[in-house]
Structure formats: C-alpha cells, structure tokens
Length: 460
Image 1 (cartoon, rainbow, N blue to C red):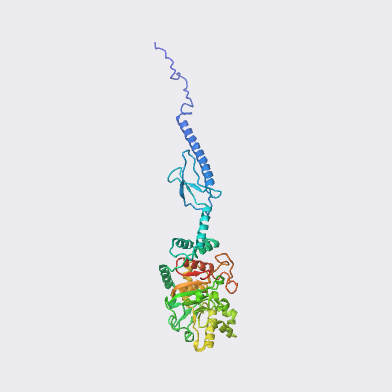
Image 2: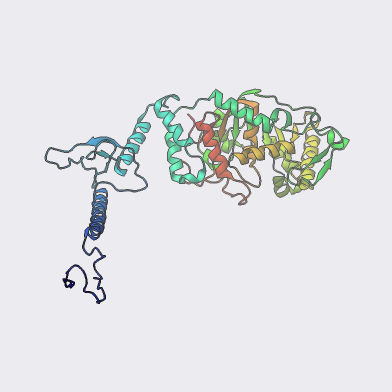
C-alpha cells in the first residue's frame, strides 16, 4: 500500500492553483530606490549651495565693487587675510571700497580695482601737471607718447563724446610737436599713388592735350572737348614740384583762429594756401596774416557775390587786389555750370592785370576724384570735399612740413568756449554737403602721428 503524501509548505497543495505575491519581484525601498533617493537629495543640496554661494558673491561684489562703465579691471595690490580668517579691507576711497576677488593665485586673495574716484584723481593730477609745466613737454617723453596714443586710440569719431575728444586734445597741447619722418613719408607715398599733385593738381597742357575729351568730376557722363582756345588757358606744366617748399601754412576760415595772434607765424611760412578769398584786411591780419601764394575760389562765390561776372567786374578785381600776386585755382570741371563761370574769372583777371596777369589755374577733375576716394577710405564720406581739405591734400605732396591754422568744425573750441563758424562771420554752410567734423578728426589724428601740425590755440 502506498504511503500517503505529506504536505510540504514549500509546495502548493496538489489540485490548487499556485498564488504569486505581486510585490515579490519589486525592490520597494531596496538598494536601487535608496540609491536614487540619495542622488536626488545630493542634487538638491548642491543646487541650494550654488544659489546661496551666488547670493553671497553678488553681495560681496556689490559691497566692494561698483561695476560701472568708467571703472576698469586693471588689478593691483593683493589684500591679505589676518589669522582670524577675516579679510583686511583696503582703505576706503570716498564712500566705496573697490576690490575684486581673484581666484588665479589663491582662493582667499583679493585684488584692488581702480575706482572711478581713483581714475578722476589721476586725470586731475595729470591736468595739474600739464598746466604747471614750464613750456611744452618734449616730444619723445613718456607723457607725450601716452597723450598722442590717447588720440590715435580713437579709431572713429563716434567712439567718444566731443567733450572727451576736446579734453584729450587739450592735454596734448602741453607737448611740443615734431614731424615723424617715417609716418610722413608713408602718407606722402599713399597720396602719390592716388592723386599725384605734382603732375595732376592742375589741368595743364602737358596732362590734357588739345583735343582731349575731358570728363567732369561729378557729371561723369558729361564731356568737355578741349578746343585750342580752351587749351591756351592752361599752363604748359605744373608750376610746383614734389616737396618744393620747406614749410607751408594752410589757412582755414574757422572762427577758432580769431584772437590767436598767429599772423606773423603764418606770414613766415615759405608758401601760404587760403580758401575761397576770405578777408585779410588789417582788421584780421594779426590773427590770419596777409601773405598768400595760392587761394581757391568757389564758383558759387562768383555767382552769388559777383553776379557771375556778367555785369560789373571791377568789385571782384578789387577784392583780389589785397592778395597781390597770389595765384587762384577754381574747380572749373566739377560740372558744366562751373566751367563758364570759371572761364570768366580767367578772362576778367587777364583783362585787368594786363601783362602782369596772375596765375589762374583749374583743378584737374581726375585729381579731385582720386582725393575723394582716398579720404573716403579714411572715413570722410561727403558729397564733396571741402576746399580746405583739397588744399591740405595738395600741400602734403608739395611741402616738406605742413601747418594748419583755422581748421575747426565744432561750435566750441577745445576749452569749451563758443566760437563763430568763420573768423569774419557766423554763416553756416549748407548742411550735408561737407563732412567737416570727420575732416578735422583726421587732421587731429595726423597731428598725433606727426604728419602735420594743427594749431588751435594762441601762437607763441
């Protein structure tokens, strides 16, 4: 007889359906769950630490440093910690402590940031030093090199406020000026490639033979046929050569020259350029001088002041009489309208002067186009270059050393005192025609580089 089967608690009873625990295959609060909870908690703690650290860092930064545009990050002077763990702060400057943490060397090192008060104090000390200096500082001194660098660091006029530009220019006036031979030579070479004043400043029989079809400067679709009659009005060749004159003065008509007492200094130059027949009578001679070798005449002056010379011509001749034997130059080939008026000037002066006729020249249109492109590359974008810039461009090729007087384009002088637009009146030019501020800005740059000398103050 078979022995009866015994019940085993490990096996389900025969004939019953097996039961499985639904939680048997899960790890409730087991190793994996605890690990996940630990990771989440660690992340939360880390996040809270970062938030608290950030608040403390911002609080300390606000306490020790005012992050404003005038403050810079040139750090100097480590701040030490005493043994008790506290930070030894630098002395207060005004109402703020200017320090900044530096983690490059040590986690607990702090370095001083120059405060706005420090910067202003140093600038004030510099101005006091410049004002108290006896006579001009030498050109090659460290101070003068730094002052010139402050000008050349301004790449475009919009980079600085006018007041800041004025201050930098005022500071530079404490330094003597000297020509930089290398900079000047390089600049002259650039002008020679684009413009070549010794060959193409004026329209001559050599560069414009009879029968030439001459294109106008602006109206390039217009062509002037150089007839034998027109050809006779041109000089045989350029009257000036490269670097012919040792020292030249180019006189602008800006009000900044008023009360400058620069007349004697101007008249001592070897060659003097003037713009648009300004008055040089005894009333103005002490400031602007009287010597004139070449003067421009804008055809609009002939049109407006002298009725295109269609009627009385003597008033025009009497105005030019004060310029003695100075030659005149006109942009006759700017457009067709200028041509007839400019030719009348030539006829009138030949009639009145007789055998001692003064030189009457016409700018070559290709020279003016080349100058326009050259200065556009320097940031001077205008419908037309001013007469002053045309003469300065020519002088840089014809003269060894160039000095500018009366060139300014702002309603105030560098000291912040109001000045008239011209030294003889306050009539403003037509807006949008010239880019005078940009022209002057280039001159200031060239002064700092030693290419030409801009005079804006009293002459010694």
